[in-house]
Length: 118
Length: 111
Image 1: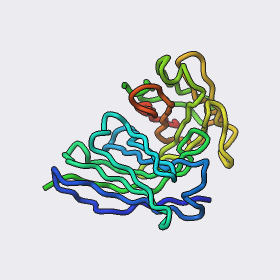
Image 2 (image 1 turned 90 degrees about the horizontal axis):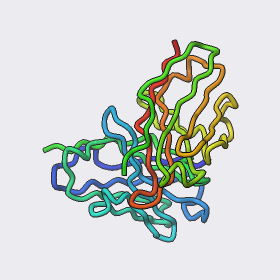
Image 3 (image 1 turned 60 degrees about the horizontal axis):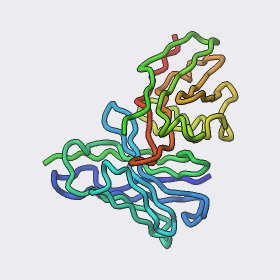
Image 4 (image 1 turned 60 degrees about the vertical axis):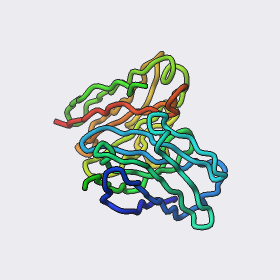
């Protein structure tokens, strides 16, 4: 069973870059049938898809965030990462990484709360 | 692109059945059989309960079932149990600007 774990700073200053890494264990990130995704949940709110990446590096983003988001993959470390530029308080959320297969978010990390504040 | 529309809350008594609706458009729910449903308990990560409209992942109880008609998908939970009390989210693949769109979530209360 694939497991995912988010890591990164829990506090980011406004206008700076949010950076998170998701470490995948129990399976290879290079498996061809999987995509690797980031999803966030604002406090007390619903879920918002941010983007996902294939092991080859092909990435797809929510166009509402596309100008500020980069998702990358490091197959040698079995990790994928999220960078979100120019953050504001509106980016405060729990950020989840997830494995996508069978057209659904099948496995999720436990989530990482990131607060944007000076 | 707007989120899919779900009722804010539903409730039912133990043993009863409930249905949660998820209304989208011809650009998402209506165009693809790629609707999934997620259960989220407080403070926990979401867990997939249904994928591709009607399919259940291994380990998910057969009390959970999914369906779709036109632009509306539905999740039915039969034989309600206390542990079913949670938030439920639908999700669909969508054409255009956003590849995946979620519903606003439905809080299920087991009375």
